[in-house]
Length: 91
Image 1: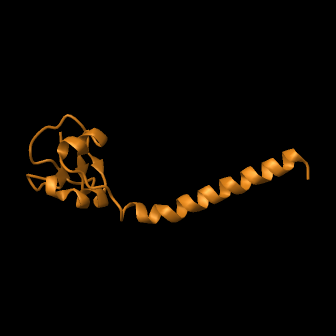
Image 2 (image 1 turned 135 degrees about the vertical axis):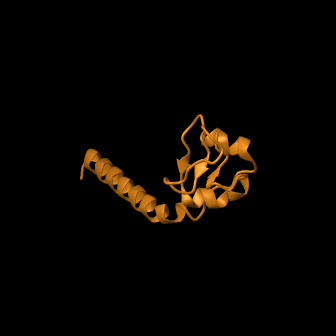
Image 3 (image 1 turned 30 degrees about the horizontal axis):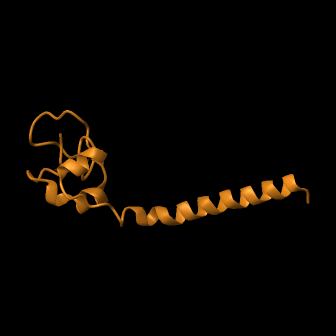
């Protein structure tokens, strides 16, 4: 094999391995949802907060931003849902 073919084969193998690792790790991403200390930290990553599901409605009135929807992330940060409406740290 020439250097070019060897390099191409090596890059292809590395790319395949990275996709396989990503696919294997995607199932555990929800299980390891990040827990934030408070709403200030959570809102740095998710401006509108985190909703349990897309069908949840905000009890506190009009919000400035749309919440990010993730059951696992909400569960990890449900302590920050003061009004218990299914949206943690809504803004």
